Structures are given as structure tokens and as C-alpha cells.
Length: 263
Length: 92
Image (cartoon, rainbow over all chains, first blue to last red; front, side, top):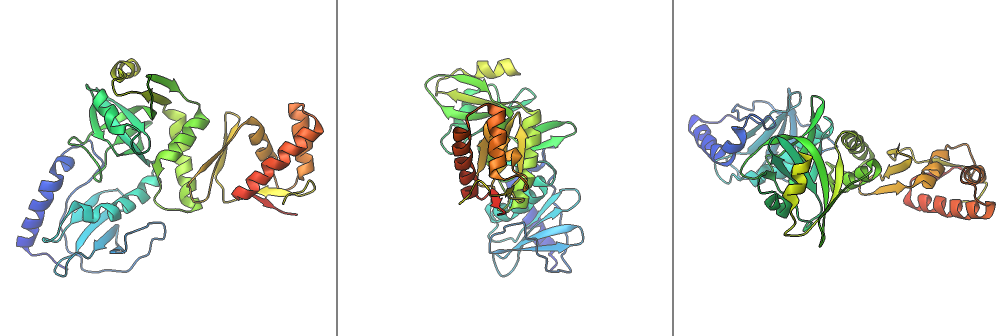
């Protein structure tokens, strides 16, 4: 399938509008936009990835392509480089929506992240100065609220955070699937497990508890013993390096002053 | 059902680790974590496919200085619980 020049320009304009802020940030995980032709396809089955039924995973040279049939004239395609984790997105002119790719792209991305000592955690991430703080918890735990309470910080996402090792330290990142208006990363200073309470308290937790709470709040790319084992190993390494805390707080709690002491 | 002369082993598919004297076990689907305290971790560590439950009971009795009846009852209940979770296998 080759794209006409006019189609390429229209597609580029669409993608620029949707992703430009994210892509222009050099600190984010490497996502680039490229345009090329797909001349040859070979069917490929990657059993560990769970993809929506409307998408197909195709391996071609060094790339994994996720092809989604949205309309008959053009197909929406995303691809991830197997070696360098560069993600490219091609899209049909009609019916493009970032959400079309979200599940399929997230699955592929997730697959590689797990193999690079990283995790996706159901959490908000707040960057304060150059330090990163992750606040994890189930729905209604206060992940969005805590970002507002730390008024001097910037929330990079209030739903999903990627934690990954960079050199010898762990960093938190937002993702193209879920980010606020700023896409920033930051060296991870602490992970907090949230609970609503009448009184503010922060308590450091033991490593076994940290592993337990981390595991309860991450997303897995699939359900089998290999994936569980992979994520378990990643979490053990994170719990070893990054301090974890219980954070009990109320709506008017002076969380900012507590967090400032940790910075 | 587990008996005192049963020989049990860990389910090889279960990822686990001892951290600060406690054991963390992950179920196969990754849907849940089992967290064992010091005593539970010691029993878990003793399950090696060679020792019978009776031998494990004796080990716990000596290590934690409890009477035989208490050690036997608690260990059997605990192992039954692990068996229901699918984290151990009964070899005999």
C-alpha cells in the first residue's frame, strides 16, 4: 500500500494536531512520525500480546505493525521498532482518532516495556522541581486530587504512569495513551499508595509490602506465568531502589509541605 | 486433602521471593499476591519435594518452640490453604 502525497500531507496535519505537544518534548519516550510504504506483509503471531479483535499484528523486517481496519480506503497503522522502541503512526484520512490505536499500540508498547525492566502503574505522576512522585491507588483513591494539592508541582498524568530504569536510576514517564497537557519525565523520588482519611499521615512501608502494593496497582500485558514472572522481577527491582509509602490524606491536607521535605 | 506423610512441592509456575524474612508469591495469572509472614515463609521454604509434612512440622516446632499439637494443626491448615490456592503440589 502506498500513500499519495496529498494523503500524506493531510495525515501529517491530523497527527500534528493530536500529538505535536507530546512529540516535541525531547524528554519523552522516543516517539517519531514517519511515512513509508508497506510493500510486503507477512502474517505474524505474537502470543503474549492481547490485541483488540479489529487489529492485526504484522512483523516486517525490524518493525511490528499494528493494522486496524477502520474504513475501506485506508488502514490505520501503528508500528514499533523492535530494537529501539521508536513508535510510528500512520493513519487513514477518514475516521482517524487517537483512540483507534490506543489499545493495540498500548499492548505492543507494553510488551517491550516489560522486557526492559519497566512497568505501567495505575497512578498519577507529579513532577516537583526535577523530582518525580507517583501516587497509586484504585479508582476514587484521590490520584487526581493529590496532583491538585501539590500546587507547585506539575501533573504529567493522573491515570497511567510508566516507570522505567534509565542508567542507574528509575524514572517516571507519561505515555502517549494517557497524559496531561505537559509530557515530562522525572527521576523517581518516591511511590505513594493513597488512602482517603481524616488525618494526613505518611508512613514508609516495608519492601514486602511495597512489592505487594505495587503488584496490586500495575497493569499486565497479558495473563500467564511468564508475564506475571516478568512483572514480578521488575517490581522487585523497583521496590529495592525506590522508597514506597502509605499516604493517608484528606481534601484539605497540607500534602505539599510533607512532600517538600522529601525533595 | 493433605496428610502428615504427604510429600509436597512448590508449583514451579509460581514466581516467588523471600524478602526480609517474608515470602511473596504471585499467582499464575498475576491477578493476586500471597504474602506470607515469617512462619509462613519458613514453611514455604521447607517445601522442597523431599520432606514430608510431618518433617516440616518438626522443623517448625523446633524453630519456633511450639508444642507438637499446635505446630501440627497450624501447619496442616496452612498447607491446605496453599493447596487450595494452587501454589503447591501433592506428590504422594
